[in-house]
Image (cartoon, rainbow, N blue to C red; front, side, top):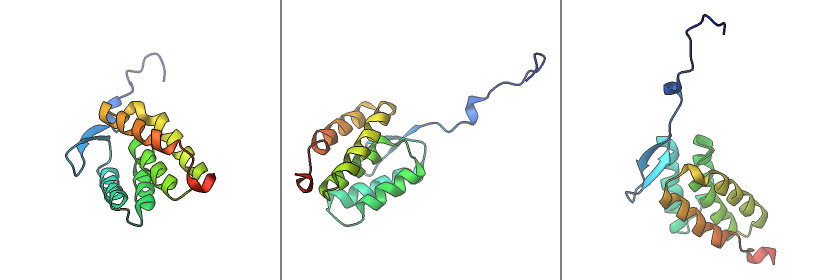
Length: 124
């Protein structure tokens, strides 16, 4: 861009994280409605111990790769499945993106971390 140019960067064209609500009415910091839909399904499957939760978290991450809650949920399901190394890697990703979430989301990640950083029985 030359010195006479009046062009400038317009940040309004960038996607912005906004607060959307999950099925329970809690705010989820996300820029993708589809990611929140996948997250809702993943949480439903996780809490019912149903199959497919890990796949739903992965689908969420395809929509929004920086969504810390999805990384934390994936870590939790991997931990339950005895996948120690992948669980620790997923949790490391959750922790690295946690600051972009609201305080409730950050606390959620801390709780998952207290669980997920333990060694699964398959690793012992």
